[in-house]
Image 1 (cartoon, rainbow, N blue to C red):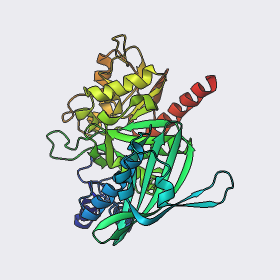
Image 2 (cartoon, helix red, strand yellow):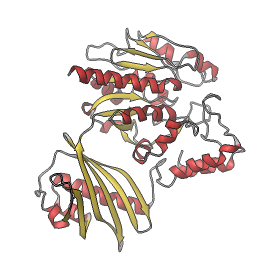
Image 3 (cartoon, rainbow, N blue to C red):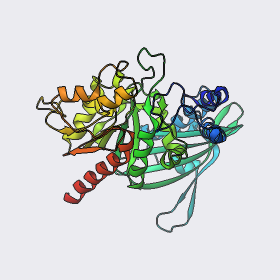
Image 4 (tube, rainbow, N blue to C red):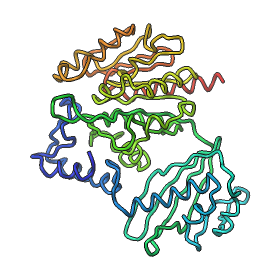
Amino acid sequence: MNGIACIREWNQADHGYLVAGGNMRNDELPGKVPGALNKRLFMFCLLTAPAGVFAQSTHTDEEAVRRTLNDYIEGRNNGDMERLTRAFDKQADLRFRNPDTGSLSIWTLADYVGKFTPGKKLACSGRIVFVDVAGSAAQGKVVLNCGEKTYADYINLLKIGENWVIASKVYSLYPARKKVLFVITSHEALGNSGKKTGFHFGEAAKAYKPFHDAGYDVDFASPKGGRTYFYGADLNDEADMWFVHQPDAVDEIFDARKLSEIDPKKYVAVYFVGGHGVMWDLPGDGTSETIARTIYENGGVVGAVCHGPAALLNVKLSNGQYLVAGKTVTSFTDREEREIKLDGVVPFLTQRALKNKGAKFRSAANWEANVQADGRLVTGQNPASTRKVADEMIRLLEAADAVR
């Protein structure tokens, strides 16, 4: 659901709809939002719509800015001097805090380009975090991961003639933070119901904040990459609204990386965000299963909440055993599925499927928070369990660090 669709939905609804075709319980967040929240809902749409983060932008200027930033990333990382130089205006400069003196240092373009050896490839990977275009000016953030160090580039661009070029760049260098992967669904259709689904927004937002606050970098990936779909955002929830105001996170979650592009060895944990969409595209996804197995067997933590554990159903370890076999787990229960009358819509019931794989299933009353941790496998029953799943995953990661 993109920002324009969000505003259209707000305009068309009697009382304002937060999510088109949502399928959440009334006490989570009703489809209809009370009239007093209309303005807040509209602000939610406005907060998200300008950046084009709910769908990949087709705006030609933004595409041109991204091409320039890609020239910068690829030119720098591959020693391609022509491509690197092309990304900058001839009068551009680089500004940074001198690590020796603590004062501002300024390099000319020639100074900067002269630091690179033509044809020499660097052990770095780069990504564009966000782009914001306003008329003939634009800003972008690029993150460069270079082993144990990470560069954060804040880049100002101008449209000179028909070309977008970098006018100035400010950067910061800091030790690489440990990384956690959030896996979300690419699926949109709620079976044959004619309704929409996707990932559960709250189950991403409420888990993201504790990881962020604990000092972890979070990446988002989905089977198809790119555009993702959601429901379950709550304008009255502090964590959800905090997430909306994090441009890096919002840009990534609605323009996700592709699972096939993920190197699981770079992550200390993987968290499968729930939402009914998971049940259609993640069980049986070989790439997703490889990621979960690799992280787990490398000593990392695997977590999932609500319908997220469905993604773990077919994960096999190197010994041929199912990851969930013999382990105590939980998920969205069969009772909860029946209560919202989707037991006849979903392709299977998660609780039953987990038990069929040999898991020991533990449930609480409908909609009550319930988290089960068995070794380095952490699962939560429903949206109310999200924060506790994240907290338990962080506890396990910190305990492992203490041992090391």
